[in-house]
Image 1: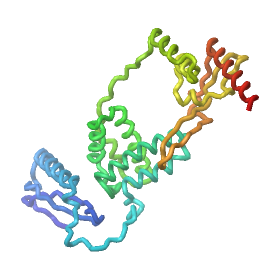
Image 2: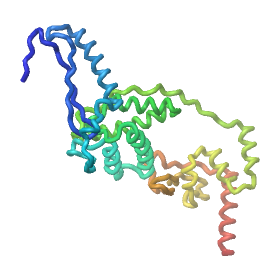
Image 3: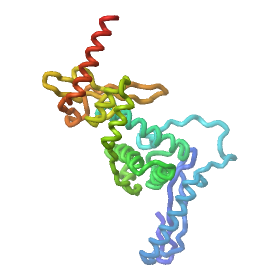
Image 4: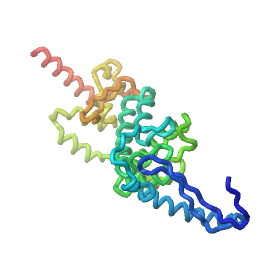
Length: 301
């Protein structure tokens, strides 16, 4: 243990890892004595920490001297111990952990977001350990996405996934704190919905008159259903006697592992998602015509 006298300069000590994963320590002299004021110490500490992070994030601190680097390096495991897992590897592991507890559609959404996050960190911070992740890393990611054209809502969506993953990391003692709590997100834009006027709807219906999507357009316009909900409609969703139409499943598509996947959700995520509407008379007529044609052509096959 080193004891500093009242006139001894106070050091700032940083622990970090180089690009070979070896732990390094750096001492920075503050030129302040132990008896200095808190205000002076705080100001100097802030200045030193800012300068240190600039060097760290540019890689100048973690770069290994080529003369000291061995000619052959064995491939490292993504973890040195349970608490030394790489950030990107942890996100992928978290996906597998939460998959059984969420809907398939939600999982696909998470997977897409995690893919975009890991692509960024693979490019700018390869092999970054979970324990080395700082609010600055995340803030730079959010800023880069926002400045590249992503909306504030999209950035918030990325943040929500990272926050959930890091919350789990804290829960299982991989981290002491959730560093995502310390970031600033761009201001959300106020959403203003746009609606078709009667004249615009009439023009839309006229354009699709006789088209195979005519029924779909009418259902979308009159009921305001999502595309996935309309695709999930089957004849068991229509009750001609009770004159109702019920949303009970969703069908969507996603791209994963280099191929398109068709996702059918027969169990919707919440009870509120299952909705029953009155069957509008002209849509009832269109449905009956469609059902008759299906029956007619099936007999010809």
